[in-house]
View 1 (cartoon, rainbow, N blue to C red):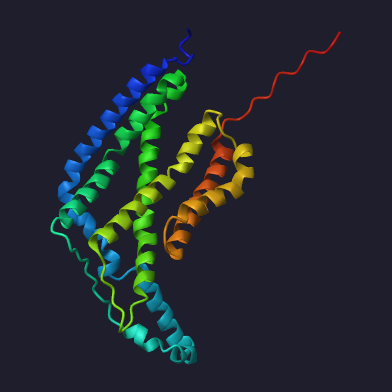
View 2 (tube, rainbow, N blue to C red):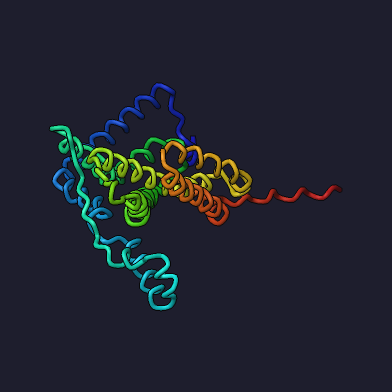
Amino acid sequence: MSAEEPKVLPFIEHLVELRRRLIIIVIAVFIGMGVSWNLANEILVYMEKPLTSVTYIDAAKQKLYRYLQTNYPAIYRMGDMEKELNKPKKQHALNYTKPLEPFFIQCKISAIAGFVLALPIVFHQIWAFVAPGLTRRERKLVVPFMLVGTLAFCLGAFFFLTTVWPFIINFSLSYETEGLRSWLSLSAYVDFCLRLILMFGLMAELPVLTLLLSRFGLVSYAFLAPKRKYALLASSIVAAFHSDLVTMFVIMIPMYMMYEVSVWVALFFGKKKTEPPPLPAAG
C-alpha cells in the first residue's frame, strides 16, 4: 500500500475509534466548563445587555426621531414622537421562581462556554477520526481546519449576540404598554439565547464544511447551485420550530445566506476538474 492510499479500518475499529474521540471531546468540554465556571456571571451580564443598556436599535431610533424633528416637523408631531424621543430607557430584570434555578443556569452557561473553549480540540478530534480516509496531503490541513472552524463558530455567535439578539429583545419589549409589563423568566431568557447562539455558530460552519467537501471533490458548484430552492425550504422548516414570526425570519434569512455563501465558496475554492487527455489520432 502506497503512502497516498487511504487506510481502511474495519467497522468495529471505527466504532472503537469514534468512542475514543467522543471521550476526549467530553473531557475537553468538561475542562472548558471548569475554566469558564467563574465567568458565567459576566457572560450572563453580556446576554442581558439588550435589557439594561442602549442598543444599536435604540440609538438608530433616536437618530431617526431627531432627523424627523429637524427636517419633517409635521410628521414628527403627527406621529407623537416627542414621547418616544424623551422616553427614558427602562431597566428590565430577569426573575427566577425556583430555589436552584440560578445554579442550573450557571451550569448551562458554563457548559456552552466550555464547549466554545474546547472547539479547537473538538475539530481536531473530528479531523483525526476522518484522517485515515485522507491522503497525506489532505491530512496536513488539520491546523487550518481547526483555526477556521473555531473562528467561524465564534463569528456566528458574536454576530448573533451583537446584531440579532438585541433586535429580538427590542421587538419583544416594544409590546409593553401601561397595562402590559414584561416579567422575564431567567430560564426562558437564557435557554432561548443559548439555543440561538449554538444555532448561529453552527450556521457559520456551513461554508467551512463546504470548503472541505469541495476541496475533496465531494460537492461542487454544479451540485449546490440548482438546489437553492431546497435550501430555502430547509431553512424555513428549521426556523419554523420557533414560535414567533420575527425569530423565524432572523433564523431563516442568515441560514439561507450561509448556504448561498457555501455555493460561491464551492465555485471559487472547489476542486477543479481535470480535462481528460486527448485520444490519440487514428492511423
